[in-house]
Amino acid sequence: MSFLDKMKDMNEMRKQAKELQGVLSQEQVTGESHDGAFKITIDGNQNILNVSIDDRIVGDKQALEKGCREAFTKATDQLKKILATKFSSMLK
Image 1: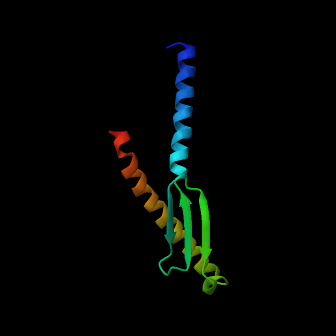
Image 2: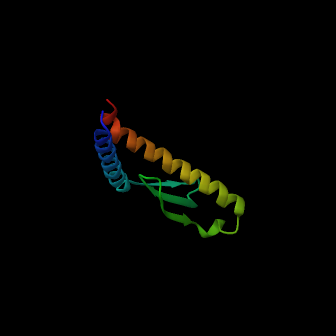
Image 3: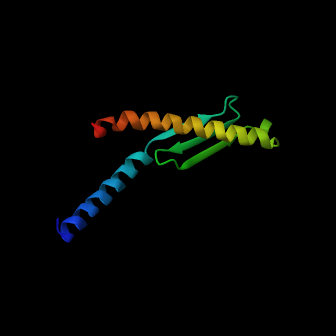
């Protein structure tokens, strides 16, 4: 494979990666803590789009930390399921 062929392949891979990023950015999921006091919305690229915190836990650092972990974990779990379903055909 010549240097030019390798460059063409790299450019094609870069183009496909950008397209995939665009598709992923259209997906959105929201995870929420078990008590519903903390919510995080992320896109398919795992960028945080929104964080919502119920007033009742604003002064409780431990509850904020726990809620953040729970909400983010649930959101990423949902996203993994969506992506597995959406892109399973690509892996076959």
